[in-house]
Amino acid sequence: MVRVSVGYGLSLVCMSAIPGAWRRTAAGAGLLSPDGAVAPTIFAEMSAAALRTGAINLGQGFPDEDGPAEVLEAAREAISHGMNQYPPGRGFADLLEAISEHQRRFYGLEVDPRTEVIVTAGATEALTATLLALIDSPDDEVVVFEPYYDSYAAAVALAGARLRTVPLRLPDFQPDLEVLAASVTDRTRIILVNDPHNPTGVVFSPDVKAEIIRLADRHDAVIVTDEVYEHLTFTAPHVPIATLPGAADRTLTISSGGKTFSATGWKIGWIHGPADLITAVLTVKQYLTYVNGSAFQPAIALGLRLPDSFFTDAAAALARKHEILAAGLRDAGFEVIAPQGGYFTVADASNLGGVDAAAFCRALPERAGVVAIPLDAFVSAERRGDYSGLVRFAACKRVDVLEEAARRLAAAQF
Ligand SMILES: *Cc1c(COP(=O)(O)O)cnc(C)c1O
Image 1 (tube, rainbow, N blue to C red):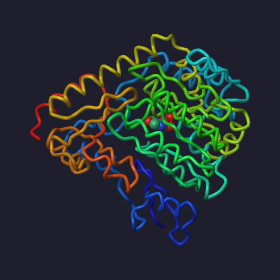
Image 2 (cartoon, protein in one colour):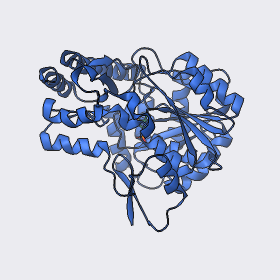
Image 3 (cartoon, helix red, strand yellow):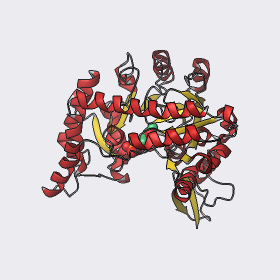
């Protein structure tokens, strides 16, 4: 038996005598250590360092305070009222209705709650089920922007497809349109777009979104979006690709209540799009988890119907947290790349002797009492060199925690 680490400390146990197609693909995608044994992820290593040294953990992206009280109360109520058995395979009708209302209210999108949307075990299951449903052959390619959320490469490998990455680089982390165009071909089955983007904090420009739609149309690819940070934008309201001309017929839109309602452990996500594509995703999803989180579904439905002020306040509160963190980083001598959305701030530690960002992050807990993750943890092996000096800090923590982290960073000797 071999333990195979595919990210975030998640590991799969495989019979080493039966490599399996996915194992070969995973090895090709750089997800396995050379001996196929446990490769401790940087996340696990850094969390252990935080515990050992008492450092503030700004490595992992989950909030350290609860979301809206009425949302939490709705889940408690649901448990008390017996909502403890399997919900329907597509999700409770009321949540499907609430998602449809939400898409109309914020974006003017019309989503039929009976045929065009399903509830999933977080955005993660929506994405994995989509890849498993739409990938036909090992020659199919999935175009992904890099750096990428760490489940992407693993899910593409599980689906047995080939990963094609388009780099996001400084100064602004927007992709080069020519590189993008060259990466999408008739072999491209899916263009996967995380917007607002983790880990860079970028929001893709209108030109980039238009080019993604043009290329998908020309090469008959499906656009799959990951919009889990849709309500946590700082410069302009979120624009889903599905709202743009020519996109709706070939776009699957994925989101989740985890980030919006500070309930990452609840794993209530959803996916909507054309009914035939949603049916394909449902056929896989029903044998992955079938259903999940029955008592959390009515709570997320309530959350999605909260007044506009909840959503604008949540974005404003997170923007302020980013500013507290950024001030500490600048005082310490980092160059801060201001995020346009999401939980994370990227900073350049090159001026502080941090060109080797992984080594810099390994030393940071002892030196500054803070834990962060090198950006190259989110890129494929061949491209690590392109992200030297760049470090990701989570800003989704309590204000007092961020103030203390900022003090520690500013006081550290680099
Ligand atoms: C947190 C996160 C997810 C996971 O969402 P879940 O609903 O918890 O599965 C997916 N994509 C990105 C970019 C994330 O940051």
